[in-house]
Image 1 (cartoon, rainbow, N blue to C red):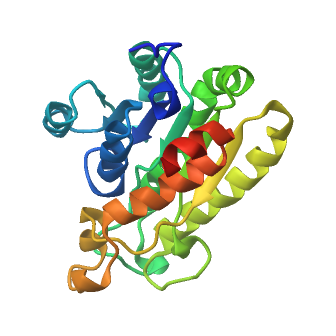
Image 2 (image 1 turned 30 degrees about the vertical axis):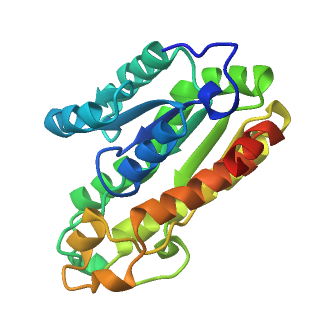
Length: 242
């Protein structure tokens, strides 16, 4: 799935999205696929990956779990092998930790470890494994963008959201430091809070929430896409406006 040097606009972009079979991740995979980008998406369950791959013809579906340390490098190799390089990485896969949500005093250490492994260590390891490809993209095409999906729970302490909020806060701070460290290399590490969305994760956290008050994942996907394109060279932003 190597891009053609004759292509223009988003057809020149290679993007990988974790948690790409539901919610915001699926909406992002559809949005970038619709715009003509080369898309690889990742999820844990093979049946979900195969279902989405059948819908997004030409997209690369990868089965894997970023919370498992031993799977990260094989996942990175599959992404690079299927796309022929990488311009954009979206770390979207998330874990709430304990479900139902509970106070920290009632949270098992193992549940906190799951949230940290998925929301912090997984994005760190995958970004690190793909950093060489992202550096090459930044040098050659002005790509090299990592978008880490955060939450308002990273800034606002909500009772019961301790594992999720703490892991997302750590991700946001890690991203800010890494962005400064990579500034001279052209790689950008971004963080975006997409807001409260009508997604399976939100329904799992708050089963009684009124879906009519929540953002649609498709609208949030367009916002995330806009933020990514604004960090890329102007020709990509022009493609968005076209």
